[in-house]
Image 1 (cartoon, one colour):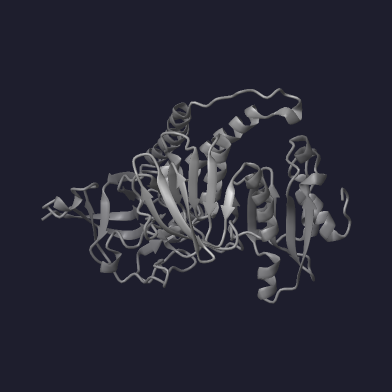
Image 2 (image 1 turned 60 degrees about the horizontal axis):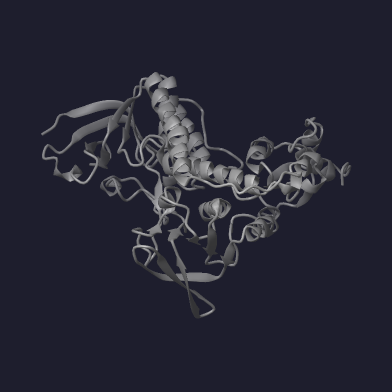
Amino acid sequence: MADVEKKDTVIVGGGPGGYVAAIRASELGQKVTLIEKGDPGLGGVCLNVGCVPSKALIAAGHRLREVRDASTYGISKTDATIDFKKTQDWKQHKVVDRMTRGVKMLLKKHKVEIIEGAAMMDNDHQLRIMKSGPKQFMDFDGGTKITWNNLILATGSRPIEIPNFKFEGRVIDSTGGLNLPEIPKEFVVIGGGYIGTELAGAYADLGSHVTIIEGTDSILGGFDKDMVSVVVKNLKKKGIDIITNAMAKNSTQDDSSVTVTYEVDGKENSIKADYCMVSVGRKPNTDNFALDMTSVKLNDHHQVIVDKQGRTNVPGIWAIGDIVPGPALAHKAFFEGKTAAGAIAGKNTANDWVGVPAVCFADPELAQVGMTADEAKKKGIEVATAKFPFAGNARAVSLDQPEGFVRFTYTKDKKNVVGAEVVGPEASTLAGELSLIVNCGMNVEDVSLTIHPHPTLNEPIQEAADIAMGFPTHI
């Protein structure tokens, strides 16, 4: 039998939450061991096969669309072409690989011990590390056994597979959608959430005809309908078909195509495409490392129950990221990783945010943080809203991107900002300032008195605050 190794702080999973927790724990004086099974590798889903490479494809699509039609600026239309193999090579080697090398360098800089292998829990006090891959359970010595002073679980999540759409061949998940060998002529996306909408827009820009099949009455269900309507308008301008209130029934495929059957109002229809990408959500990875061998408690959604510092019900075991309640977002995992590492070190850290910013890189982009007006009213909070359109912003107009708006939701009595939303150009960038405003509990007067440079896309934030104050300028 293998000897048991005693470690200080052990982290399972090298994704956004895990590697950030490792760095912060090291900075706070802990000896850190990071266990990563290697699929998808250090940096996790987000960096290797998720939010980072998807933004690279979105950027490539935008460039191609702009080159093909810049007539608005008086630039002659050209017959631009794309070498998709070069695009994929750039995405992988100049974007993803560069960033993963950075993560490895940072972990090395902070003297984090990295062990490759799959962690399997034995009990509340011990785990073992098995070799990754198909032969991992054929290791007769039982793997490397480890105990700890503190254990942080950061095992992430994976795509949900729906009946009759097994991920194989031309039925793919989002990872497959990011790594297609060619640009499909016909592309079906099942699920109109963040991932589905983003990649639908990217492939439409690259030249695909895209169909989104969504089970509810609207895509991007987490955002207000007036925000979504701006995105829907642009998606349709790209030639994307959006079919709502539709239930995906089954798929059949051959070597060159896949046929998707779906039902709307009791009537079955079918679409033949080159590929079908299923993006209906993700499930927490709490069922694939023998967590049931421990006393760690889960909720009804199979997420680990934690307190404000990431502490589970088992002393010395912590959990962060997609396996705990809350939005499955990398920046939330970053924050939780720092919180848990700080709490282990005795710091007074806590996941006490007012709101976690959510961003969708659609066209135009959307972002929101805090409560919407409806959410505030349901909680009995008397609120008002103030909205400024990008059509009144010189920078947005000069970019030929005047659609969308910035909106504040604020209390009627003290005018404190409890929520903020933006749909329009560079909404993802504006989300940082909006998060600061909401999480600091700023008053609309604070925002109104903050000088914003001109001409920039930040100005609508100040303009919306001016409206809330009753002194609108450019509207």
